[in-house]
Each structure stands twice: as structure tokens, then as C-alpha cells.
Length: 183
Image 1 (cartoon, rainbow, N blue to C red):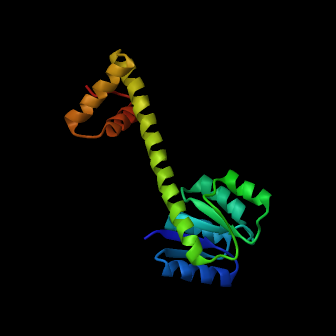
Image 2 (cartoon, rainbow, N blue to C red):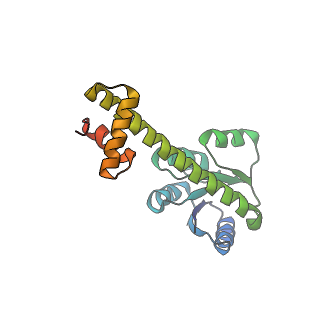
Image 3 (tube, rainbow, N blue to C red):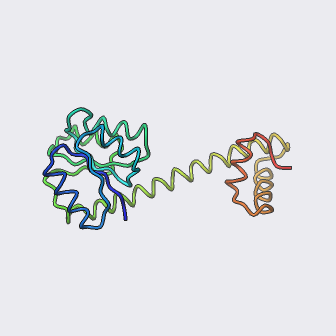
């Protein structure tokens, strides 16, 4: 079951949306302001945050900036404003979606499921990129340490991984962290 955080200062909207999404099978965490939403995102690590743009204190746009800088929680916006400038700001901040109130829960559930799927894809891509960087760095260290060309250094690291029955990424991480190649 996916965990959603909903941040909206309007009690009626917050209650209605939260209850509807619970009935649709989501776990829901609620916040009535941006600071509380940020704290909950840090502690609860929801799979997706739904942010109202206009909230007192920390508004949805600033909250999104903080989420990008301080967490890995993906987000989308829901608001009463369909202003093109706000939509562009949301896109620039990395929002997975932009919904205009009033919201009809049965109609937004498919979009939420799609946003959750995109978020999982992004997580996989980030992990692969990080893994590839580690492997590339380890190959560079191995090339220098063993005086080998790139392909031969890669094959030698892969052989070490196989001999130890561990993933190449694990060997690469060890090499990068220690700065030394296995003997």
C-alpha cells in the first residue's frame, strides 16, 4: 500500500481527500501547513506528497524546493489556481503532476498510481546511475593500480566479484571507498 502525504490548510479539502484516498487503498498522512508537511516527509518518508500551493507560512512551492533539497520524496501539486506561470514553476521544481481543484478522488486515483510508477522508475534510474559511477570510478582505480586498459581492468574486477560471489557494484564500492584494488 502506497503512503501519501497530503498538505492543505483547508480542513474540509484535507479531510475529504484523505478519507477518499484511504477508501481507495492508500495510507494517508495529513498536514495543515508546509512546515508540518516537511517534518512528516522527513520522518514518515511517504511515497508521494500532494501539496497545495497556497498555504500559510511555508507555501507549497517553497515546500517543494525544500523536499528536493532535503528528502527524496516526490511530489505533485493540487491547487485552485490554473495559472500558467504556476504550472511552469511546478514543472521546473520537478512536480510529477499538477491538479486543479475541486478534486474528484475516483478520477485522480489513476493519475496518482501513474505518478507513483514514474517515481519508482526515477528511483531505479538514480540507483543505476550511482552504481555506474561507482563501477566507472573503480575501473579507473584498477587501471592505474594494475596498469591495465579499461576493458581488462573491468573484466578483472568482474572476476573478483564472481570469485567472491558478490555483485560487481559491491566490489566497486569497496574499491572506491578504500582506494585499493583486491589482490
